[in-house]
Length: 298
Image (cartoon, rainbow, N blue to C red; front, side):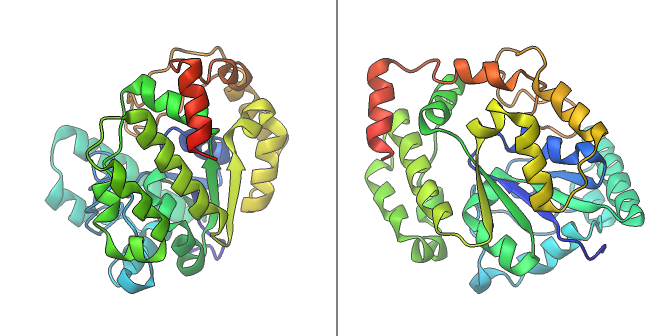
């Protein structure tokens, strides 16, 4: 360990966590770790990265259930890669290539004194635990609710609230989640996405030691915005970093492909013109749906 805190970038999926994580890693001081709490393999269910069993989307971790999670995440944030555990669980050619990539990155990062950066939307409801027990500098991205719902609509995504409500400790600590019961089994994807945004917004607003950052503020003025995040995270801002961030955030906008994975990192980040992306953020919602989302999230 370097003695410097690990970093967690979180927020609901489609809130810019991959973009933010990649920009923070642009200075070469971090080892980027993608979604260890994702229950889907890959990128999750990789015991070399996280030696713990993820059972739910938005897995809730707190002091009452952290007996297994704490040592597992201490290994992850210390960049201790579990080669044998990974090899026993995942042996496909893709998995072996991933093992080599992550194993090398962890080992070299530890030797070079780099810090771990966890990019994980599925940690958003446990952000307080990451701050208090692992000492993470936590950055939580929050997107405008209309843009968030529109993005989920374009991708055809929905949320299954039983995965939240079946976690008793989560409901105990965040009782506003009980509001979601009325939407279990609903086919109203707009209402469900808006409800997820609303309760997550309330939870983050009262979570200590978490820097809630508006995606739109970063997108409008990325260079000073990321410089502030570098200061918060204790990272070195330099002319080279400023140049890399500027180039990555002013590139030609591409059609939204969501999580159309490429490479081994399986990140959603694509170089883009972040300011222009804001102009079409509500694309796919009718004016009536926009008004409805505003009503449901206030």
